[in-house]
Image (cartoon, rainbow, N blue to C red; front, side, top):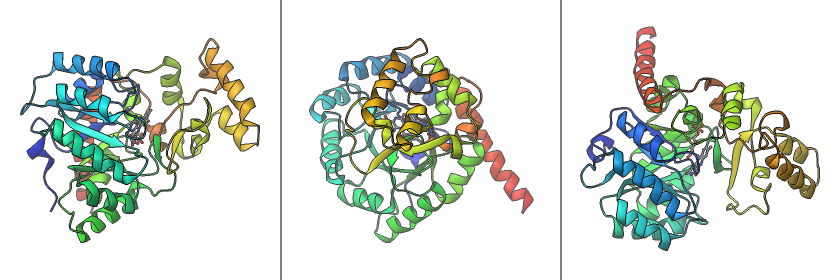
Length: 342
Ligand SMILES: Cc1cc2nc3c(=O)[nH]c(=O)nc-3n(C[C@H](O)[C@H](O)[C@H](O)COP(=O)(O)O)c2cc1C
């Protein structure tokens, strides 16, 4: 039986709604608003630790500590974040959650989680993975406090090869239980944007849901207006988004570990790549577009717009608090509707 999240995060309302720690998008204002609404607010992975401290100070100013920790999460990317630089920041601010995603190999999570637990023992370590084998490997190497299971519909980076959350999450749950890790709580991500998706994730065995794409439309999110317009205007996410490595090759060589690619809107750069256009030419067109008036958004459609397949259901800007409340209430309503129909 999985450990209940309410024991470790007393401010949360069930079912738990979490904003994904979207690097450069999810700052202190978003994290504060999501936690205030009874969710887990998170700050996205940034490379510069001064920037992270600035965002954490916003939260520290707005929220009371809860059991000595700051009631939010901080995302870090072990393949590129510097552990020794991150530790003093984590030690100083003591976030409730340290969320790790994308290590060069699964053993790196062992080092990261051990060091994080050493400097801030009350913080919980959450790790996001996208396969059954990765979930087991990570559970064995460092027993995370929570595993975030990311399905292939997710926006932004994720496992290149994957399954949607509908088959991934129950298989992860069953396999973890078989290996003696059935007490690790699971949260689900990938394509969940409303109460119906959240209800489905709960039925699959998740204790909470993580949303990235839906929060791109939160008022508190840090986002270029052209990016937001593109998200709001896009429909039919299975057709209008694509997983590809080309998005990570537009500014130079791809530095992501080989296991990962990313899902974003189909852009002209993607279309050129699919048509066999040389990467040097694609990079040059991309760089020019970014310098143009609309920064590559709008007409030119060259700027990368990370978004998941749920993008078609995201069509209005709202305060983050309303998103959390709407999805939480929507999950209960969806579950009730199902019961009454059967
Ligand atoms: C714009 C954007 C940026 C993201 N950046 C990060 C990141 O920096 N670190 C991380 O762990 N996940 C990141 N993700 C992935 C999320 O953790 C999560 O898996 C995903 O958003 C869930 O799918 P959804 O977008 O369909 O809700 C990002 C996702 C998006 C859409």
